[in-house]
Length: 126
Image 1 (cartoon, rainbow, N blue to C red):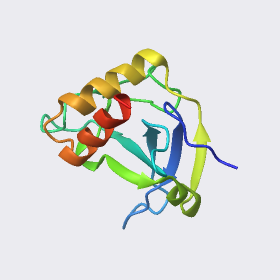
Image 2: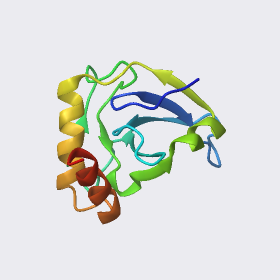
Image 3: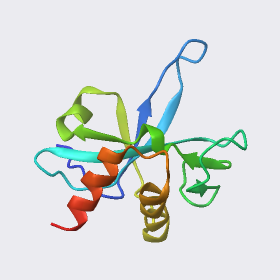
């Protein structure tokens, strides 16, 4: 049985046309609150337009092989049970210092949806 906890990372299949084997690293940011959690994911850093709120690189997590960034505009509040319905593989947790950078970026990024920021603030203030 999978238990979603902060810092847990998941390798999720995110196939698209032209790359059916594409996978992205997702990070759980909260414990379940009323069955819901906050997740963010990484993508390769390609342009100066990518969100610079939290840039990660090789060494920040074993899965990361090159400069990447947290895609805050895709951060989500999910039902924890949704994770049971997608193709995932649990990987190593992110280190505490990396997790703090991710959270700081979540709260500072202009691209993080307001409902996600509110959910996270309510979570830490409970």
